[in-house]
Length: 301
Image (cartoon, rainbow, N blue to C red):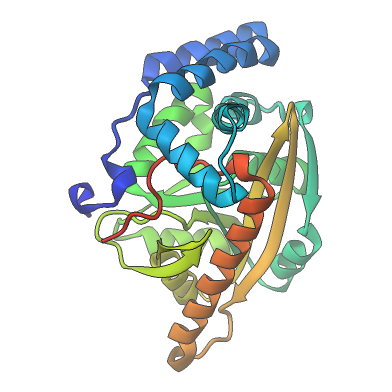
C-alpha cells in the first residue's frame, strides 16, 4: 500500500528517535518509574508548547469530546496521558505487571467465548493502552495475546519492542504479507487472542463514513472483513489510563461471525462497524484524555 496516498496520520513526521527511546528505557530501569515520570512531565509540556500540529489536533478533538473548549490543564493532561501509557510499556513488557493497579470489566464473556471455540479477535483503537491488556491477560489468566498490524506500523513497533523486550516481537503479526491470513488463523486455532486497532486507515484501504463525536469520520473496513473471513467472535477492548499506576480494562462483545452465511456477511460487517463506532464514542466521551490520534481525524476525501 502506498503511504503517500494515505490519510493525514501517515504523513506526519515522527519526532521520536531510537536513541531517545533507549535513553528513556535506561533511565526508567535504572532509577525507577517515578524518575521516568518526572521527565515525562517535561516532555508533555514540550509537546503542548512546541508541537503545533499535535496541539491543534488535541484542542479540536477535546472540543468535540467535552462539548466545550478545553482548558490548558485538560490539554496538558491529554498529552501527559499519552506519554504515560508509552512510558509504562517499559515496565509492562519487562514483567512488572504487578506494579500496576488494574480493574477488569467484561472478562467473563471473553473467557466464555474462548472456551466455546479457540481464539477471538479483540478490536480496539488508539484509546488507552493495548499493552496493559496484553500484560494482564498473560499474568492473570495465562492468555496469549498477539497484535495484528500493517507492515510499516509493525516495523516501528518492533523497533520499540527491541529496545524494551526483544522477546515481545514474536507477538506481532504483520498484515499485508501473503501468509498473514494463515498466520492469523493458526494463532487463533492455538487459542490465542488477536488484537487489531480499527480506527485508522492505511494507504488506499477501503473505508466507510460513520458519525463520530458530532461529525462523519472515515473508519477502515478491513478489520471487519478479516473477522468475517476468519469466522470468529469479536470483542471491543480498551485499557483506559486512570492516572498514576491505575488502569481499567474493558471488554464488550461486538459481533460473532462464526455462523454468518456468506450472503449475510456484508450486512453483519456493517452492523459490527456501527456497534464499534458507537462503543468507541461512548468510551471516548467517558475518558477523553485517553484518545491518542494527534491529527485531524475527521479529514477525509
